[in-house]
Image (cartoon, rainbow, N blue to C red):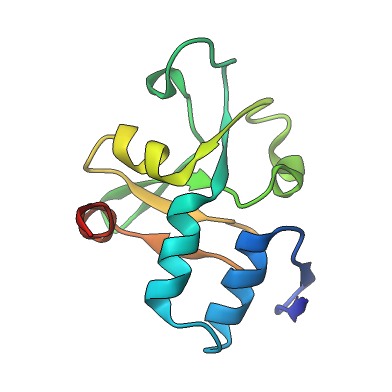
Amino acid sequence: RVFKGIFMEFHAVNELEEALLLAMKGKLPHDQFLKILLKSDLFIPSGVDIVKSLREVQPVIYERDNLTMIAIYTDASRLKKLNELAPYCVQTNARAIFEALDPDLGIVVNPGWPAGFELLPEDRKALLSE
């Protein structure tokens, strides 16, 4: 599937991205997308190599409305733009990432790409409690 964003096309390269495009088009219910998300692997760019724990990650950070958001991607190929800023990447299950992160952090999925979304801290907390 292909999604045409404002500046570029987004070609889905895995099941999660297929589901994301369907959800963005209203063809996949939100709750079904979230189930797929929690079972999927995500990719976190990091300024340092990760040895033992997700807590070692030095993520790419965005500030929005006094809220700290970290960048997470649906496929490793989406990180190419960040090689200089964050030369390392950790791949792990979304649920594990969401549970390990500081509860006050928000998440930006696929920043810089036309297919993505944000999860505020309270959204992440609600998602994990389901």
